[in-house]
Every structure is written in structure tokens, then in C-alpha cells.
Length: 118
Image (cartoon, rainbow, N blue to C red; front, side, top):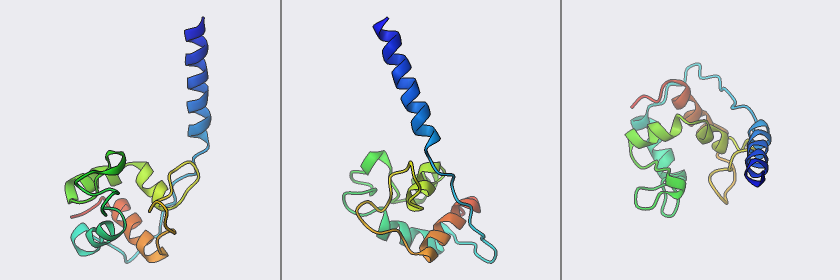
């Protein structure tokens, strides 16, 4: 009986937590087609793949943004866009810093929305 109570409590917590996340905001990317090489790598290197954060040596939460293939895989997850947009239910990133500029957010969001071209 105790196991059922614990499992029920965990499931209810997960359901409540998942319902409190804001929806990912879609950006108007008309005229904006950033690629990893042209714009995104520099942003990720300066804002995300820094020492002690999401770099290759010790990626926080196992999320590495230091190279294209792994950055593409990680950016495809909703938590990437929810975090950089500072949405409710996501860990605001960059951690301990203010939200990225609208221009930087548009670049990253449009990159994801356009299929994350290299």
C-alpha cells in the first residue's frame, strides 16, 4: 500500500509540474535564416558553451553546446527554447544572467525553427 501511495504522489507531482510549463514561443523568421556556422556557434560559445556551463569538458546537466552535432541534438529539445526564452516551468538560461537580447533570441529560435542548418 505504501508503494502505491508513493507512486501516486510522484505521478501527481509530474502531472502538475508538466502542466505549469509555458508554451514555446514561435518567432517570425521572415528574412532570417541563421546557420550554425554563420551566427549560432558564436552565440552558443559566448552564452552557453562557457567554462562551467554547457561546454565540452564538464557539460552542466549533460547538455553540451560546444559542437554542431551535439548542439543540434540538444537544441531540438523544448527545454532549450523554453530556457532561453525564460518561460515558466523551464530553468532560465543563461543561468545567473539576464535574458539574451531579442536579436540573439531571434537568431537561436529561427535556427531551431528552420531545422538547425549547419
